[in-house]
Image (tube, rainbow, N blue to C red; front, side, top):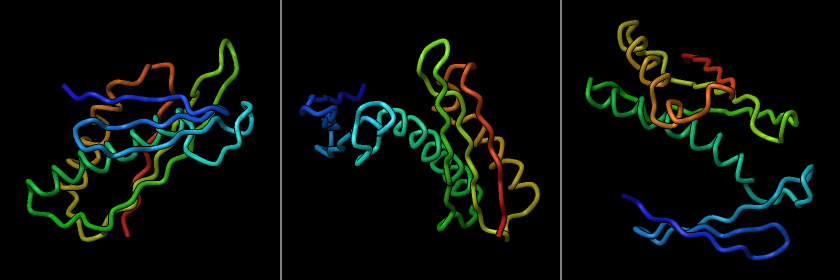
Length: 135
């Protein structure tokens, strides 16, 4: 079990602390929802969790298979919807990877991306699209 804590700092900002490491992050409400948009919003962190979980899960597979993965990166596009309530409507992730990966390893890595823990934890109502680009 991992514990975190969060404190409301005012002006729609929070500070969250990862208790095992002491690492902290700040959030801010987005501009379209009364905030200043100067930090990650809570829903930005959901998308960021998805993209970093995808990269981490793929890296575990790449390491297991002895393949290079350093420099792989992910770009995220998050779209909010307002009906029936304000929530994340879709998350699009584009993953850029080394072009030297074999077709077999590419299939393994792409399967891992689709089965990362965050992807598996999100509601089916959130549309998730993954795109893979090999350099």
